[in-house]
Length: 306
Image 1 (cartoon, rainbow, N blue to C red):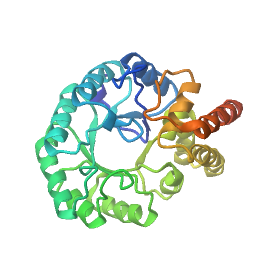
Image 2 (cartoon, rainbow, N blue to C red):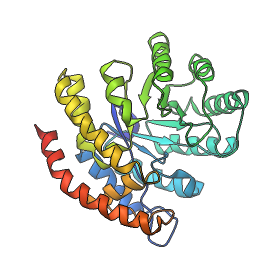
Image 3 (tube, rainbow, N blue to C red):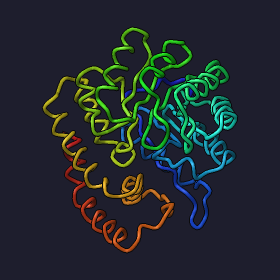
């Protein structure tokens, strides 16, 4: 079954993007190994070239080429971020992703420069008009790295029927809850993009699933927690969520997504060098994190099997 024939499930791992040593190009071999690792870890889908995947570092052609290889290799449906600072670039990537055969695309507002909500609405609407007939389009709200999609803007766009749903990485419960109320009326999918509050959203029935950076490093943990919630084993899910929060606390001091990439490397998947140096203290902290992670991981994996 090809990637585009599969429906997105509830736990979608937000993948890091391995890069070649001493280069800024994508390491395709390591990427394919990562896809296999995530499949074996039990997730339902994989999100590529999002914020965890550091998409701004890679040119359009490199991103498109990676997708061609990933779709052919992946045994899971793929969701790909096609965000770009220009509308033409986003449409190009969206059309390329659709042609490659992904299960859906994420589109965020244009990043770096500040835009008002009217411009953001026009950007996202124009994109959807060009791409939504080719592949399901999901809004991607991630204000910490881009312009926020205000609730009123999101509500208006979701009511057009051009969008299959939304990933909200804003981390604000009130915002997410309001979008979830709209979901009941309009029937779109709503994915949590903040691992810190996913368990709360899933237990409350407010989220269809999660696009999770933690799941890239710990696919077994996020998958098992989600299964426990679905099966009504809330006490076990809460124990697993404490492990999720502990991991998030350990990686929080590092620039995103350094902690995720280091964890993936420690799980024997090549990731390449970080995009920027961490400095002497940062390097020391990373070594300490690695020691903690390697001692912590076996007990976590055992808990996931119980």
